[in-house]
Image 1 (cartoon, rainbow, N blue to C red):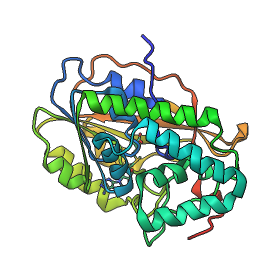
Image 2: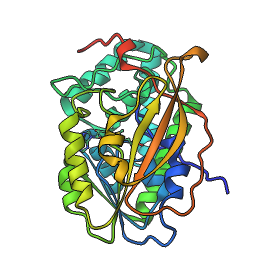
Image 3: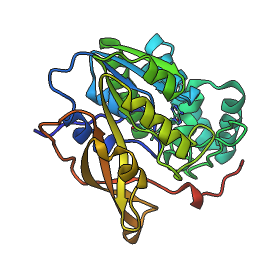
Amino acid sequence: MTMIVGVPPIKSQGIKTKLVPWIHSVVPKNFDGVWIEPFMGTGAVAFNVAPRRAVLCDTNPHLINFYTAISSGEITSNIVKEYLIREGTTLLSKGENHYYFIRDRFNSEHSPLDFLFVNRAGFNGMIRFNRKGRFNIPFCKKPQRFAQAYVTKITNQIAWVSKVIALKEFVFKCQDFSETIQEAAASDIIYCDPPYIDRHVDYYNGWNNICEHQLFTKLSSFDGRFILSTWHHNNYRENEYVKQLWSKYQILTQEHFYHVGGKEENRNSVIEALVTNFMVTSVQCSATTQVQYNLLDSLVAHEI
Ligand SMILES: C[S@@+](CC[C@H](N)C(=O)[O-])C[C@H]1O[C@@H](n2cnc3c(N)ncnc32)[C@H](O)[C@@H]1O
């Protein structure tokens, strides 16, 4: 059966929306423990898997603040609608200066609404923070960004996420993955989607050899079940950590296409992997559709 996948209100270059049916299909049908995500990112996986209980963590405080504000009712679809209509109207009349005004305001006050604004009006919905922890993605260059249809789309995404959070027991925490894994119980499932080494490094997204080994050690000594998303190989190289570390577990693979810019020749195929420490009995393939996945390198940032 085809799964209908919801899209969260926050975008990011590492979002797993297109792989959700595949990830969801490996979750045991009778699972009733706590779903734990040490690297929640946009929350795309958790909101779609929609377990009864979840602990969703990330070291990026702005992601956690945003979903905590939805959870507490500080942000609702009506509040977002009013805010985006107001700021979108000013963006239309003042142009990119208004984007940079909101970006500066976000960087000093950290309001979750301003985070949504810069995320949805920034270049290709990317998240990147400089060494001082300041959001530095440039404007998408579309002053008409928050036209009515786009505001409706975002408010529907907020309504969907608000509903999932209201119906379930979801807890959001800003903390390092090691702490999150430490807190998990044997009856839980940990779903890990760490940053891929060498890609999209920023203030909250550094990942290196030491981190990968620490993650391996932590997950290997966990008594419950885990699922890890990583990449297996592309046209040029293999992920050496799959061979070196993860190969003692079950590894499932699926081809996935990333788009770098809009041109067909820039379509890159990557074999994605799901590593599990339990036997998966039925697996559903996601449709191999394209996903926007733009290289940060090609950006000319206004603030580095
Ligand atoms: C690939 S993204 C997760 C994407 C997510 N599955 C989604 O669909 O949106 C990785 C996330 O890990 C977070 N992160 C990076 N280092 C971390 C660490 N040491 N502990 C916890 N989270 C970390 C980043 O802030 C980022 O949000």
